[in-house]
Length: 306
Image (cartoon, rainbow, N blue to C red):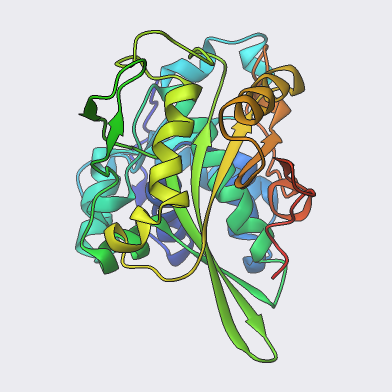
């Protein structure tokens, strides 16, 4: 619940950075925002107080508080001991639009906890790149705006147990790219990210129901058959990052990939165990960039290496 003191809040460059990252990625916990502003060398205590002002205080140039705290974050074990998860308010959106920092193609879809897991995953990769001089992060909006596309791709795939083609739009949870700065010039690689919290079946007889089996079929056309190159106007390779909360779920998906596709170089798997039950808002997970991803029939892969 907001408790305004009437204090006047004027947006600083740091505030705008936080709003921009919440808009770009989605709901993020406090530790992520402090990591983004770490270069400012302000104490964590002062920064947390400022985040409190951005939530509570409504006396602003844009007529309201700049960030929200979604109620879903409090529906978990010992929620009062967790980090706070922040998201941009409608007032924050107005401020970003005024500064030309708002992008139509930055949004993500799905239930709140799903969007939070996506946000923590993409932001973890970006924060890890900020620790390295040989990598740069390419956000989703830059890819989609360049291609004149949205985050939905029409594909016609063969209906299960039938020869009839059906349209099933592919909607990745997120897209991003990496620029690898090498002595021979810049190199590029792009990624479609899919987070799986175990709420969907691995296989399903109903082809209209989203499942990992259908996911593999759609990405076989999108990646292996190069549909993404025309839809996203890309020539660089694209890989699929599958993020799951625990190793048991990952092993089921690896087995299904082997059964359905055999050796597969472009489907990569890693766990983000902070999202296993009981979920708690996580710290930035640099392992998504710095640790190996599992593949079927191929050696493990480090996305941070050229």
